[in-house]
Image (tube, rainbow, N blue to C red; front, top):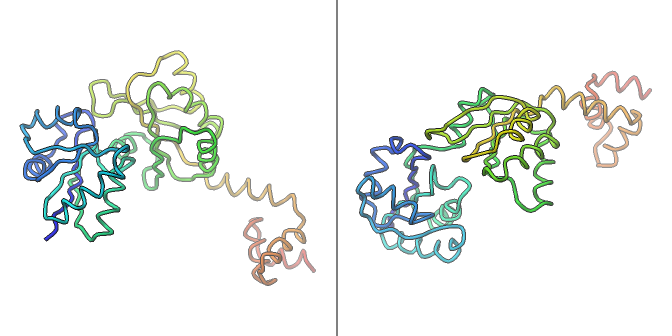
Length: 278
């Protein structure tokens, strides 16, 4: 019988956030797979956990993943931990879970700390719908494409950033998204935890005078849906109704469907489009 892969959340700063269940699972597992064994040993030693530990990280996941899967198929239980927080989110745990899913291996979470969720709930911004972006891409072209895609994102956006790249990222977000509300959350659950609720332009100015220190989560207000609709209406107003209709007819829509689409784009009733075409 195959073993179970446990996704064990660990503290993101404050060791008191370690759960009783997480400690038990780590002690009872046959193997602990850790993103950084040296970093994780500090945690394991603190809680007197002596389970054998092996490395599993971004640079060995292709080679190591199948080996861990084989151990699971042989009946061993494996606890996966990341450097801090919940594994499987913006880390190589995602790859291992996919491999386990393909093999029908049981994967179960051991919930706990997650920087993304905790930054979101203290941000003071809308929490009902949000888009988690983790770290923006480093490569310039891919980074610009991602920023462009976020321009019309209506959900609250959560981005991680390191201190040495924070100024650049804030400037690029301001340039791409405009002057949105933002909560800059620093060192969540740690001694110097702070929440700066401001705007992107003010955040850029603030960190020009205050050198960033610590790890950051940026929680950014989504774009107002009314603003998107107004921009779309303005864009479509550049076309005559006949030209607008032809765009949809060329896509294969019949006249009735095209009129409905044009009316929606322009924010008017279908009857108005019908009268204009008479």
